[in-house]
Length: 452
Image (cartoon, rainbow, N blue to C red; front, side, top):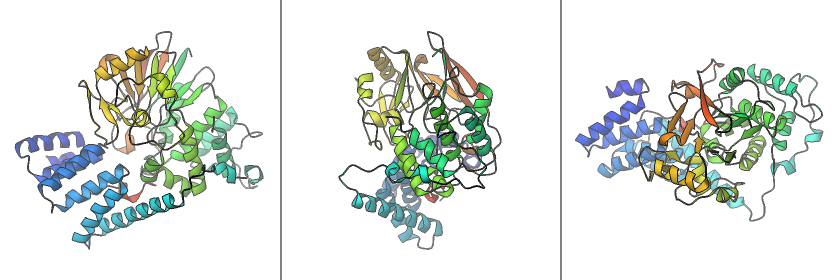
């Protein structure tokens, strides 16, 4: 039955059955290790790490436990801890090619991080923009794709670019640099979209169903524009360009995947380097750091990618004071805004992801009451229906990447907020076909999880 769950990608039931098995036999290392794999598949990296660690407490010679724990730590960006476990696997299984490849890749990352720290200066880091001479970049005569008009984004440019991307063609690097440089920025109705994760053809479908952005059709995209899906460059350039075209009517919030660690592991960095250059990725990284972390709509609704906070007492004024121009820390309000998740029971608990926390309906109620808000909208989690309403209607999740990673079978959704009461209206949609480029095509090989 459990083999069927894994072959059918029914990881939720696999977790359920292994939990039942552990209730009967709590000292079985194999059960913990296999449940760890199921948690990895559902991106519950914190739970996966805990189960792998428990398996090793029961049997320190159980090699799969080290492998699972290494994979969990990699997903959490804890590269040194992962390297130690991969080292153990390779030492015991020197002929295991997959384990050796993962060890070498992890070792390369650890050395790269050490090198970056060694050359880092206490001086203010210079922007990539300082090293660019965009004005003198030449657009070759044989390039027939979309161009900015007098350096400005127009509606014609947007339509031409979306069709250009649809045909899997690449925007000229000068235009791509122009779009990102200008995005470094120091309603009766609005549409809120959740994670899009590089699913460009589903993004086009949203615009087909709901209309292109305009001054009368504003949008808010709630983070995680990139990674996993293999058309992340096309997604982010389209979104940035609409921000330039309609700066007051098109809004972008940062997600946990608009960060260097996630981009390194889940594909965006590799995709940008494959389609453009390493310098181009560095500029994307800079722009991501300037993206807002939350948005308050009509003093009634707070929108953020992740969720609420590890401690009570956080105010909207506290959020305005956050220094967002950086990679997120491992804890605190900035981390929570990008990473936390709701839970059905009151109080707070350790995050299934291994980062931030999970917060209950009482936490939501206190936050809303203190800040005189009606409800929060967040994203960050796959939902079968594309959205979910929890905490007595006070916490709404929206997710806009249907059939996530070509395997989850979920619907996508977006939300309309309209009128003085901003009552949410939910609209669902299903995945559309895309060219034969698989998700995670540009991801780090360490994230291509094996069944070891």
